[in-house]
Length: 292
Image 1 (cartoon, rainbow, N blue to C red):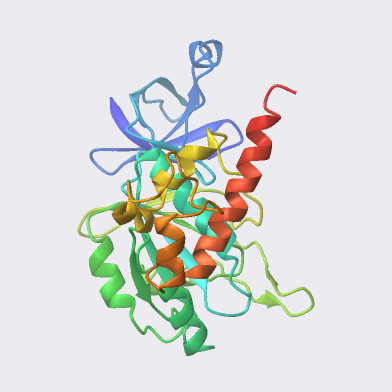
Image 2: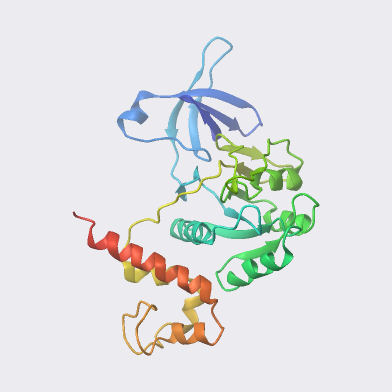
């Protein structure tokens, strides 16, 4: 039989088959020997168990993509939730998540949540990503503003919800689909979100598609790569490709850089570009030290 892993807990994998039945399975030893680690979202072959014994997960079918943070496979869309306020939006994390999605061939959609708390801050965040290759929605999970438009955009997709703790991921899923996921407030003392989701779980949706709730996190390292290729994953840079004085151009401090000229002209958001330069410098250091 075949199915999809919807969650994994303590060495057990829960697989949903085509008839909507969930099976509790253990992975066969041959998967461990082959160093194959099943992930939520994997399409698998399995032998069902019975009332007395668990079934066996026999094979993981080829993946079309896989993310490590959140750990999930075969995703159509990453829904990146950014809080307009409370907590203060971590846009560097958002940029890293967008890079991770592009590297894996996963489409990204951005939801700027909690717009009721600071409408101007929400507008500024949305403006920074106007050319980043992702649809941007301003929403308020608490009041329902903008939720229907976002739900329509995600219809039929298998989507993972990611972003910093406290951004309102679980609250937004509750608003979108009527789930009863646990939610938490932001700690007033340190202005960080409390982790209310403890594991990844893929939830089937009426009308098709699946949603995956993921734990929030505050650290994410970008995959090591040749620094000069980082620019290729910024869609807002692409209209200026080949127009710089020097080649290759990092679009950082080089004279005659068409991208920097676009930043100065207001065609590319300066804060988004500044974070790109910071990531570029980080990548240069890691690339230089990769063997040491």
